[in-house]
Image 1 (cartoon, rainbow, N blue to C red):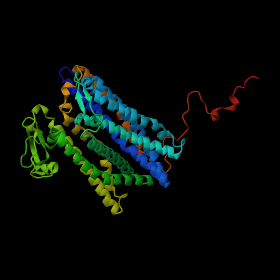
Image 2 (tube, helix red, strand yellow; image 1 turned 60 degrees about the vertical axis):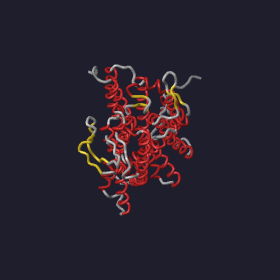
Image 3 (tube, rainbow, N blue to C red; image 1 turned 180 degrees about the horizontal axis):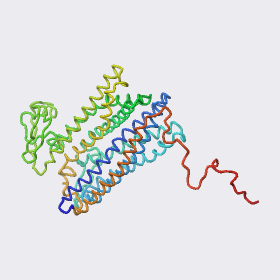
Image 4 (tube, rainbow, N blue to C red; image 1 turned 120 degrees about the vertical axis):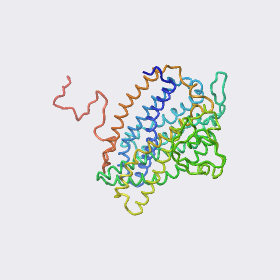
Length: 472
């Protein structure tokens, strides 16, 4: 059935599919790990059980999300050798060590302290347990550091040369790691993870409000989530603006696609709010635009000239409709988050934060939008880089493995089926955990009888009357 399909397109679809599943879990676990560290720190500082109950409640959700992120990440990485072997060969001397650093530092740090964090509350001292929680949170941030360094280098490659075999080899590792787009992308992604977690926490609290479960734990986590939105969303909008200016400097074609600028504007470019980019005619049909506003945003000058896609070869154009609309979805959701945060401030000022049902309904609806915004942002970033895997240095069509379309198509179908079953079950379990309201005496992960190794029977479970006496 895939005999006449494009193997490059199928390979891109497979990577996009697995990446879309993977990224939502790290985006959640990065923010949730930091949230758990804050909760435990507040409990240790204040002694209030509400923070401990919330810690025990959310750590169960973190354990499942973290495990699903690890599994999906391992599967995704294998595609570098199966579908993208040419890319692996050419970019491996740069990309390989950076990904190894992520495993050796970040992942080992997370794995080393994760068991203590999950199951060591009653087995180690409070200080050591809090240290383990902090190390898991730091590990998730370090993981984001290395992965984003790799991806940013693919967006804005620096600090390398090409050897006789056509491979990219590093000249200066600091230039490779701290490439021009990396600081902006790291800040933007970490803030996105914090906002995603805040929206989920706020949405879960809102669900319990609407179900009549307005206990102390629900009130506390809703208040904390709304404060996070108020404080972080403006920072994210500012970080996104700075990231956009950096992208204009190093990847102008991506910004042209984001803005829908097919033509150059010598006297100020309009901001196209909505419309349908037409790749064939090189126009945006049914455009609703504000004159000169794009020049003001990107150049800080209403009359500043802006180049359009007509200034670069057509074969270097990214798929404009996808980039155009994914960017607008991300930005629209960002301003919706800001609106929710400001509305919560109004409710807090009026003393209605915990009993305004309209706010709770809105927070519930906004709960999953952080994941949507993260996915839209990554689509903008990755599709906007096309037609290159390493921007300006290695084209996507030259990066794919020499595979026939049926082989790639069959594996894509297999991924869809397996992911649909496994991750649907995992997501259903996460929703079940969130459906149960946090309790005043939350059991956490260490409740019940301890699990014992095979062949070891607790002494209390042995009936003395059935014991066989040993011979003298």
